[in-house]
Image 1 (tube, rainbow, N blue to C red):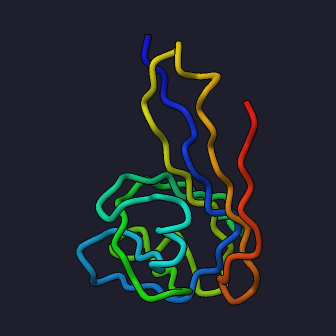
Image 2 (image 1 turned 135 degrees about the vertical axis):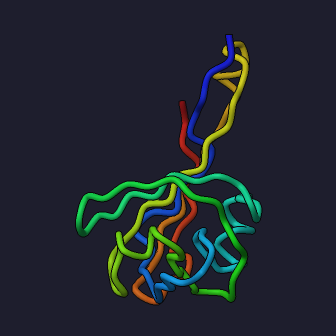
Length: 120
């Protein structure tokens, strides 16, 4: 059996911009993408800790520290809101115990504060 499992979590990043007229996606700084192994054009689930909204979109690479919500989703976030961005992986159930998701914590300037490896 294949299961959808958390692969990486960007915890409480701060929205630095919104762009309603952009075609869509969320722009995430290159440093956060590299630390989390989230790839450009990968699908992510985004949870807004300020207003409870959740949406799925794809990732675009931006400058370090950037978190820009684009397209229709830009109406679901405001500059300064805190987001939790979740990336998932499909894995075989037999591989579950060997999977190690990571959570990345950020400071107020969207700089990486801590990287945690989650033990299952």
